Amino acid sequence: MSYHIVEISGTDRVDLFCKDGQLFCRKGETTRQVALEDVAAILITAYACTLHSHLLAEAAQHRIPVIVCQCFRPVGIYLPVQRITDTLITRAQIDAPQRLREALWQKTLDAKCGNQRTLMHALAPHRQQSLEQMDVLCAQRTPDKEGPCARLYWQTCSEALGLEAFARDQAEAFGLNSLLNYAYALLLTQTLQALLTSGLDPLYGIGHATRERATPLAYDLMEPFRPLFDAFAFKWLETCRARGASCAVTAPYKRYLREALQAKEAPFLPLEDLLRTAAKGLREAFAAKSLRSYEPWQWRTIKWDGFLSALTSP
Image 1: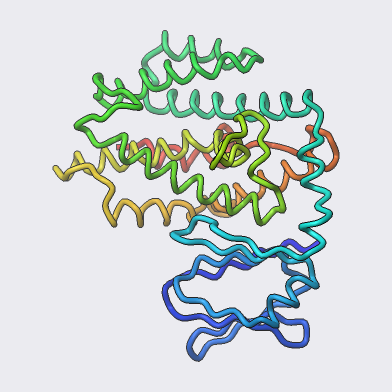
Image 2: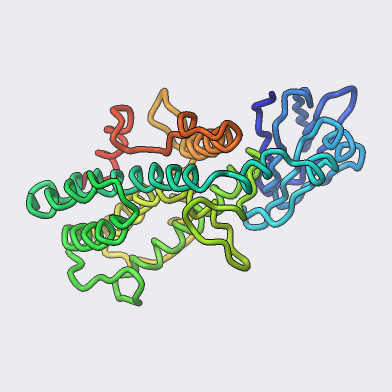
C-alpha cells in the first residue's frame, strides 16, 4: 500500500502532470517528481493549479483519489470508478457493528476528556478540588461524562484565564469565542483532509449523528484535538493582553494557527501528521472490526510535555 500524501499548496501557479508512471509538479523553473505507485492521495489546496487530463486518468488507474480544496476545506473529490462502485472501506464503515462504534466512540471520548484534564492541570495547578473532580469524571467509562467534563473544564480554564463571565456559546467582549470558533473550523478542515486522504467517508460517524450537510466522522475524530486548539487560542489571548492589543481573528492569528499545525516537537510528528495517523488507525479499525489499531491522540505522552509547557507558560 502507498503512504505518501502529496499536498499541493501555496499561491504560485503550479502545473501537475504525469509521464512514464511519474507524477510531476512544476512551479516556475523548479520541477519535482514522485512515482505514482508510491502516492496514496493528491491533496490540492493551492490557489492556482493546472491539472492535465492524462494525470487524472493515470491517478484513476493507480486508484489515487484527487481531493480539491477551497480555503483549505475539501469541496470535491475525484475517485477511480472502482472506488465509487465497490468501496470496501465504506462498506466496512456502514456495516460496522454497533458495539464497535460504541467502543470506538468511548475510546475517542476518553482521549478528549483526558486531554481536557491535562490542560486543566497545566493552567490551574492549584485548583485541587476542580482537578480532583475532573480526575473522577475522567475515570468513568461512559459517554455520559462528556457534558460534566466539558462544564468543569470550561469553568476552570476560564477562571484561570481571568474570564469569570465567559460562556462558550455566547457573544462576549473578550473575543475568545471568535478565536475558538476559527480554530475549530481550521481543525475541522484538517480532519476532513485526513479522512478523505485515508479513504474514509466522513458522512458515517461513530458518535455524532448523521444529518444533512454534516460530516459526523470528522466531528468524531477531531474531538481529542479540541483541547490542543483551545490552548492555541488561550495562548493568543494572553499574548494580546500582554501587548494591550484587541483579541480578534486577524491575519496574524490565522498565520499563527497554520504554523502551529506544521510545528513539531522534534523529533516527533507535526499535528497534520498526527491527524492523518489517527485517521489511518480508524480506517484499520473499521476494516478489521477491531479496536486495537485505533489510538486517538492523547496529550499525556511524555513527548508532548515540552509542547504543553510552551503553550501554557507566561
